[in-house]
Image (tube, rainbow, N blue to C red; front, side, top):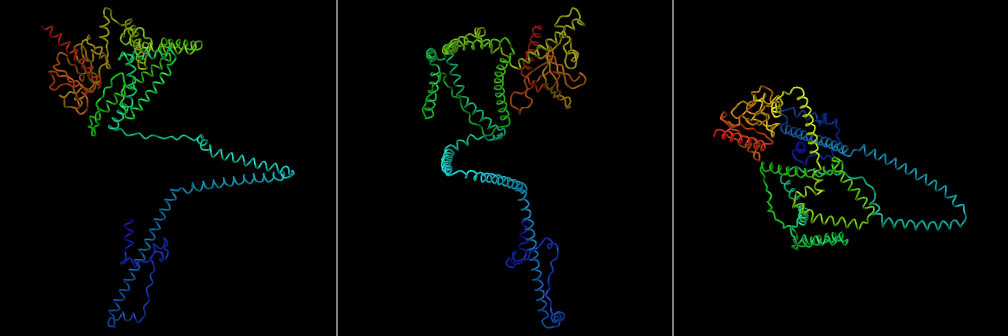
Length: 578
């Protein structure tokens, strides 16, 4: 649009010949669309005759003059039209800017607020007038008494001025402090969350490690004192502590130790090299942060951090759940001990002086920390029998343990009920318990031996009673439906059984005899991902390429079970042949 304006603005021959917009007549919107009437100068009849007569005198000169006059008039008309277009366009732009300004300023809301302020001002003026009228009515009644009242008024004015001065001095002196106690609504600030970054993640982990280092060092020193890591240091600490407790100086001793620690920290901050620790500090090599990480390194870093966070949160959750279950009477026999101990402490605090109670608690804490814990750590069997706090803490269950116990009790009840009903109704006589359980072990689709066409004695091992979920990759097949199958893998005493999860005939299931396996090893399906993989490769004479059981969450457990059973079967067969 600006380019078009420049073209219109510089349409004439020279810029000096343009008419000024201030001197040009005002143009309305309707004048833009209509043609502008142009007054053509009238020529006399004589001039017309001279123009018409081609043989007349000065015919060529007059013709050229008329052409020049017509050209100049047309140029002027074009200039006037250009100025009019520019003026109309500028008017349109100004109207648009005015409309935008009105929308931004919200003139309507401002008008409403102005009206409200006017109403408030009128109400305040009415109130002020009423107060003034009331005062003017009270003044004549107050002027009726004689001159003694005038003297009293003088004293009132003086007292009023003194009070105003005192109030002003108080506001100047303490007004700022009074304003601090004014109640204000809390500001809800929303913190912006940073995007996930590998560099930021490693930096935060290092910051957390550096921040927790003083706490970990303090805990290590306490455990070293309790373990008598340095015999002389622990003996001196034990003697000083017991002497302080006996004379009632335990609290001043701890305060003095805190002051001493702050003083040492001040000297360290000033540049002094002071290192006092019972346990020698091991300087760990600091790895420089990598600038560019590959995709696999970033993925492995996220996995490591997630594993550490999972373990840390799990430990914290265990501690909190044990404390909650201790106070919620989840195990009444444990909470009952705490209940009676609290009652005994309450009765002792009511009748015994606090000096004796403090002395008893301090002596018990010192003997427990320096002597009893040292003996219990060196003798775990004594600790498991006689360390009451340790026994209570270990016997407290967490919420997952309670859930497992409840599920185990429910399943046990169902099994006992089912076994009783089965034994009472349809169990054949002369069949042992093992044969009965193996005969009627079932999968999702029916009895185990019927699904895989095996003998009734074959049943899954106890480790894989429910099987391992995985996918079978048969690289000898070319069809996508036969190349990968999802299902469950079982291991029996003599067979490796794979049950396909797709509905259909039992031909999709796979049964491999353990003695037919020529090689078994761990396998990594995708080499791009970090780690050792989640697959097991099994080679048999009937397949050109090994069969791969991939996407197994418990790959190591399954591999150990299959490998141990394979070695057991092969060793038994070799010994029988020899």
